[in-house]
Image 1 (cartoon, helix red, strand yellow):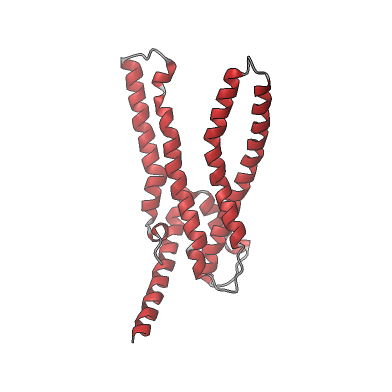
Image 2 (cartoon, rainbow, N blue to C red):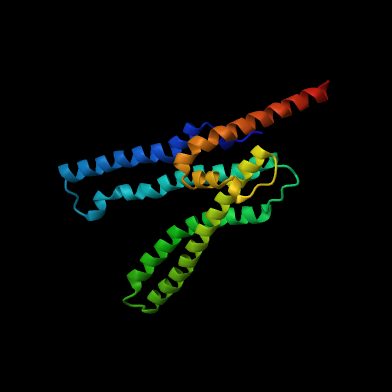
Length: 213
């Protein structure tokens, strides 16, 4: 079973998820503070250029965490017994909705800025902002639900693969909260996933050797 996120060690996921963004923000903040102290910017935006790097940092964190989710739901899910029924189509649909929402946020911000700028001459622009804002608000709430849905089935997948049977929430309550607080939980969950992958690859290798005999 060849999956980068499932074969990775806990620290290999923790570093790009939390350590690198944290160190990067400290360095950028120190640079901005040094620039402001030594050379006062003429405009306020000249001193907060670090904000432009925030979307990139958030993107890196999101790619790591959602990439891990996808690998657990699709790759690790292959180790679950066939009698355990999982709503695969719904799981995949709810997985992508938060990603779509994250992509819409920059567009929404640009839309708001543009309409606020012309609101003095076009009063209807603020009505459009309000309508889009209501849509984004409900999409935000639904995206939160989808994320918890993904966490729930990721925890269920891991535990079902370990126990080789259908599981209920009482079986994987701890895993659910470990995944919810992912930067901490990955230190406890990832070694178990590594063990499952090693066992699966070992079984695959033996079966392949038998087939060749």
